[in-house]
Image (cartoon, rainbow, N blue to C red):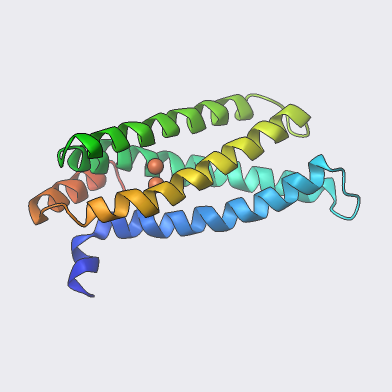
Length: 163
Ligand SMILES: [Fe+2]
Ligand SMILES: [Fe+2]
């Protein structure tokens, strides 16, 4: 494995998950838009299956993904400087907004139009959030010292994250 890949192991896993998130959101968005437009060619069942799959994947993966970023990665990046700390605060705020929508969604029944709209918003926020991390956080991950990267990996492992 290349040295960089070995050193950035937690980031490599987070990055891979961002890719998976983009694929899932793409499928979900198509199904939800068709459902909201009442497109008869796209059966409602398909949209419901996509919703369930997405919410399940969120619960299984994204919740831990957020925790690893919050507890292990972001604190190390925030140590770089003030600008970097501000960016990490922004990303954490976005986690909060996404989680808030998620909690609303799981409390309302499937097929409910408001739920579908909130889910669409949540998916779009998550997509933009992951794009922002890829664009703005990755260059900062590369600035971390080997000791900091080790701290990130240890923190991630403590949370039960497989890297
Ligand atoms: Fe994040
Ligand atoms: Fe992320």
